[in-house]
Length: 453
Image (cartoon, rainbow, N blue to C red; front, side, top):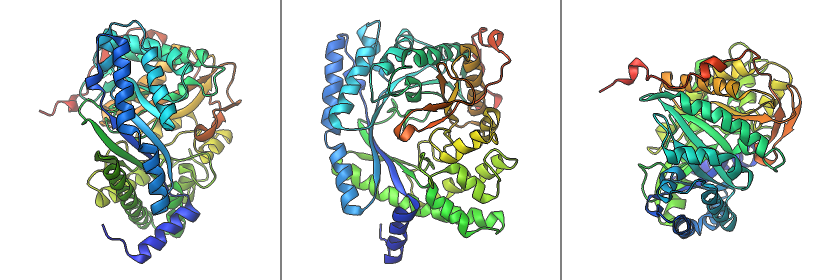
């Protein structure tokens, strides 16, 4: 891959003025060969394998930062869903498995490790249930572990028993970790159509179909895309779209270079490049501000979903022209607490939970990092989740929910999560109940267009 001096100068400008960075390099590690009927032996195998493969991950990332001048904000690890590994042990709690992962993350210096996960889109095994039951204590007693549960797919439909269970689990996790530095719910994601190669937390896990170890890269550039939008101010939408696409192409080339180099130095394969626009609480690093620059008075105004659809599509089109390894989620994240423009929109009441749900029909993920009143019933949480899962199932796309009940807080009050997780106002939730619907259980069948054989 050859870069001209003009391209290099332009890229340096992106780093210095427009907050372009590699948001994360994530090493995915298979733990399938670590399963053991003796839980102590299994945990030792897990520890040994993670330390062996990821021992140099942070150092390599730092070296690449210095040599190439490319900021790499986070170094992370994802592992095989623990429910698939711990089931062989016969243990009644998997909290110790979570603590082993946490120990690895702390000793290696990574900021998160994902994979305390279960795949329950069609049914729940005893191992899956034990893992889900372990989530509240596991996330409250560890600092670096992230958890995810996949409850639906387009091919299998939605497991409503799992949806009900996860509503209760989210509620319990919020209560158990209410005095922790980070609320456990900020590290817990519920998916439909979860990708097996996602480098972003909290939903990253190393899929069973992956190899022993890979490097997946998440590139983020809301500030760069915002600058591109400003260049096309007042121009027709199609011209703006073309400008965003070209900028996404350039961002992707940079990510491809970093990912390839990191994989080479670590002696593993390069997996995928995730193109998602991932905002931060910093000013100038916001997806909401891009939407406003496109012509909206505020995120959530009429036209928001259309603008977001265009933005997401152009990011993907630009990316796939630059790399054959595009994967993960790839699109635009709209987390409330991690986007200063989105926080402002909630404060100004230009955006609501229902509008956010509509936006998830066209963005890359779902209802992300949203604080809700602490007294929200578990069945209402499950209902919000079911709505979001249905969007993913019917549209054959990934959708997710990361809701954070804030104990003792009501709509409009502020909740702080700290660091990259930010903080946000508690958003209002529809007061009408759905308990009878959620308590039915069972499974929502797959949509008719899932039958493609």
